[in-house]
Length: 396
Ligand code: HEC
Ligand code: HEC
Ligand code: HEC
Ligand code: HEC
Ligand code: HEC
Image 1 (tube, rainbow, N blue to C red):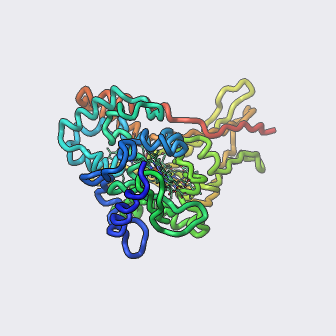
Image 2: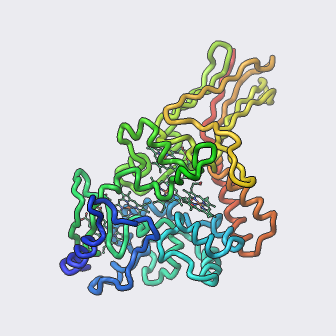
Image 3: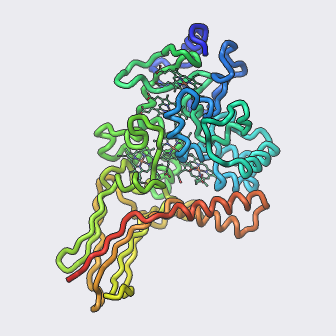
């Protein structure tokens, strides 16, 4: 824990790094590097340690939220299980978003196979009480980790203190203080991993188009950023479609009988992009007519999805997603004679696309290490399906 000397060094570095207009140092997301060859010599071992368990010793609140988020689990079995068949260069290209620091890259093939083996053996999540000196797993295993967003050239970057605007270096009794930059509070901060360039469009829309969808919505005009929904009060939760409460908060759902019809209404009320924003989830809306004994007489089904296939390049098959603010009605009429009840149900499959990917890869008989990762990923993806909504109506 060092104050003054660290401050001097920090100011010098930041003077060099900050662009004239302020904001993030140039190239913050371009082959990002959290360290330089030499750590500030007066720093303690704890200040030099970039593992999230080290940050946790002083930033317990952020750590406790982050460790349960998907960012903490971005170095996933579903991804690394694909690496042996892809090779080193392509694997490192995937790490660009899943574990992007130069310190997280694979240096050679042996590095990669060792890391895949370790990932199978040691996967119990993250624990603040862990003996920090005994955390021997490579930094890449912590995926989109604290240092990925906050550390460059040893320096910490973060948002200005709450209610303040000034972008400047601040002294603090650890890691040479930090530099406050307002981009941390802006949607643009999330774009490097959640938005593909427009040049990669398929049917006019890139596969990842979250920032553009947001910009076109009233949330952008009203100044409601990604952070306000996904990091409320700066909590590092990053909850999304895998979290039933988050999805319920985003929608207003209503089912009722109207003029001889059963109508389910879905209103995308508080989702700052398409529902869902990616091509990977699928939402299944079902209606069933049942008789008095509960037997099914007839069924209706709709799907909310942006469906793409890869066949000599990507093609879009359909896009039935809800845009921000959109109200969608699903109507059922003409039910069979002895219908006693109509049951609506909405099921969410957050990893629908990946389930297919893992099954196809497993059918191709991959090597044993890949197969163990992919089987694990498939089980997890299947377990992630959940029921969002159920309602039974009784037509008179
Ligand atoms: C020994 C304790 C300690 C450790 C370890 C530590 N920090 Fe800090 N950090 C602090 C203190 C103290 C501050 C100043 C807080 C303030 O003044 O609001 C701070 C400030 C920050 C800020 C700026 C917060 C803001 O208001 O914008 C960020 C970002 C940050 N630390 C990230 C990290 C990361 C990432 C790690 C791990 C790689 C880490 N810190 C490790 C003590 C620590
Ligand atoms: C531009 C950033 C980016 C790149 C590059 C990238 N991903 Fe992802 N990946 C994401 C995001 C964002 C998600 C979460 C949204 C989703 O589920 O589609 C994700 C989710 C996944 C998932 C499902 C969740 C999990 O981790 O199990 C897999 C598997 C995956 N990616 C594999 C890959 C592979 C393999 C590559 C390289 C060919 C790759 N990714 C490259 C951003 C990226
Ligand atoms: C995906 C990027 C990302 C990751 C990963 C991440 N942070 Fe943050 N962090 C942010 C953003 C963005 C903000 C500002 C949020 C806002 O202003 O609404 C922030 C704010 C902070 C702050 C200031 C909080 C406050 O109340 O003023 C601290 C401290 C911090 N992060 C530490 C950490 C630590 C420690 C970890 C790992 C356990 C971590 N962050 C992981 C993006 C990230
Ligand atoms: C360094 C790249 C990176 C940055 C920066 C980043 N993310 Fe992510 N994010 C990912 C990846 C990769 C995943 C998928 C993790 C997985 O499941 O493997 C993800 C997952 C998510 C999820 C979970 C989605 C779900 O399927 O439930 C949310 C929400 C999210 N990010 C929001 C944000 C927000 C908000 C920001 C900006 C403050 C941000 N991310 C910045 C890479 C990033
Ligand atoms: C008004 C609140 C709100 C805003 C603003 C918002 N989101 Fe979301 N986001 C949600 C809700 C609610 C969900 C869950 C439903 C869903 O998946 O669409 C979600 C889901 C997600 C997911 C899960 C994957 C998926 O396919 O849906 C990611 C990733 C994500 N948001 C990233 C972002 C990013 C990046 C931004 C800023 C460009 C952003 N969000 C802005 C509310 C918001």
